Image 1 (cartoon, one colour):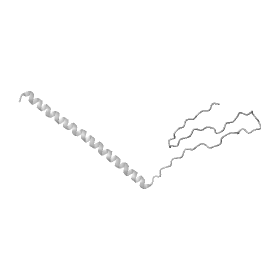
Image 2 (cartoon, rainbow, N blue to C red; image 1 turned 135 degrees about the vertical axis):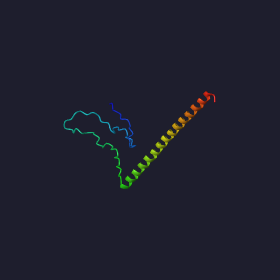
Image 3 (tube, one colour; image 1 turned 30 degrees about the vertical axis):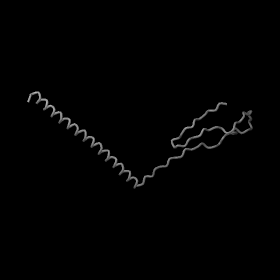
Image 4 (spheres, helix red, strand yellow; image 1 turned 60 degrees about the horizontal axis):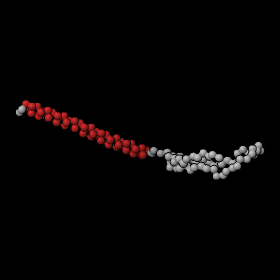
Amino acid sequence: MLRPRIPVNPLPTGIIAPLVQPTTTTAIEPHDDTAPTHRNHDHTPAPVAPTRATVQLTPGSAVALAAGGGAVVLVVGAVLVSMLLAVAITGVSVALIAVVLRLLIRDMQKGR
């Protein structure tokens, strides 16, 4: 008889669900009205994924988290401000060089 095959899927927790296969095969018997209908059923429970533990935030860890976040904001801000300052200094120096070159070219054209 055809049996569907379920592939092994890795769960996010790292637990791998094994391929489920029946352990016994049963022959088809003629229908009997007096026989119970729940015969030959496997009543093993399905595997349950472990639950994730919740994080307990204490006042000390909240202060440490806030201080760490503040430090990250300060460092990122300092890096961005320094990059903006570098761009501004580069722009001013390029403009100054352009003015000096313009004056030199004008002097060369006048023949001084």
